Amino acid sequence: MSSSIALLVTGAGTGLLAGGASCAAVQGGLLAGAVTRRRTSAPDRGTGETPLAPVGAFLAGKLLSHAVLGALLGTFGKALQPSPRTQAVLLLAAGVLMVLFALDLFGVKAVGRLVPRPPASFGRLLRRSGRTESALTPALIGLATVLVPCGVTLSMELLAITSGSAVAGAAVMAGFVIGTAPLFAVLGYLFRRSSQAMSGRLAGLTAVVVLAVAVWTMGSALQAGGWVSFSAPDKKETVTASGPFIVEGGDGSGSGKGGTTGADPAPVRIDANGKQIVTLTVTDFYTPTSFTAKTGVPTTLVLHGKDSGGCARAFTIPELGVQEIVKRDGDIEIDLGTRKAGTLRFSCAMGMQTGSIDFA
Image (cartoon, rainbow, N blue to C red; front, side, top):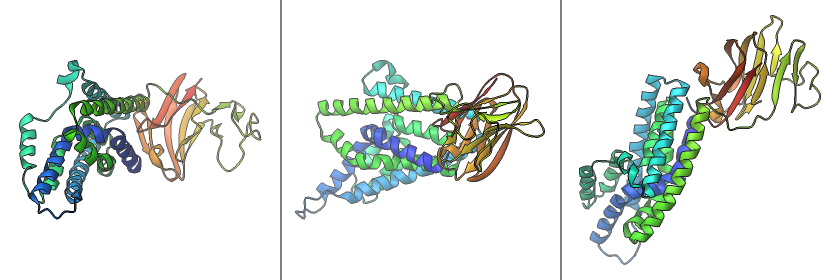
């Protein structure tokens, strides 16, 4: 289960960078039509002010419907309890979907049929509703936009499923809508009133941003699945028969001396019973990110929470199907068994923070 706060930030960032323009292309005209209808039908008071109430009502309705959908998708994901690699595949699919959407915005006709679109009849129904003068119309249309998703919205829905939590699923979808809010009304107005040439330039800019987010998403998915790691290890910890020592990157006082310094246990050590203990300290990050351990020795991984927070708390070992929520302050033990030579990768559930244990 991913951190709800991390997912809220991820959703908001995606909405701000890519969702505003892409969703405005699909939904912006609906709001613009409702606002224009109410402005022209209302008595002219000579103020010249843009009616912000319909815009707020639209976004409030959209926020509510998307948060509820996110909660349902997160609950669905929790019921399924997908493995880390299944979650990574879903995240990879979200990235691929964004690539298709970006190519469609670039005007690549070959992908047009592959991009999910709402039925044309449903779009016409919403546009007709937008012409009514009811004060509730913008809010109702905002609620209904959950049924007219843009490509980036569909990607966020997949991410909500991988969260495995109603709260986290609602967080990622609500964050996405919040991220789109600053740009949504402005971009929707531009798409509706600007020339075709201007619309084309906005679509091209949107495509570039969506493509960048897609690349980042797919990279995170590959790391979350444990297939690759793009992070350079900060230092490597190792163990020998005589005891633990830091090969490089240590503080100098305990390096190479078979002991530990300070209050924290040695990252890699052999206890009195001959069991190998690998200790990963979890704050907002993983420390260290790379270990070397002995093969043929019963091994336990200790997740040492030290005011842990963020995505780092959602710890996974994709190869073993391990998923744990690290204690904010405290230890969790994971039995790794007796390992053969090879690399065992770990990461947060979002694939943003990674590390490895090399057994040799």
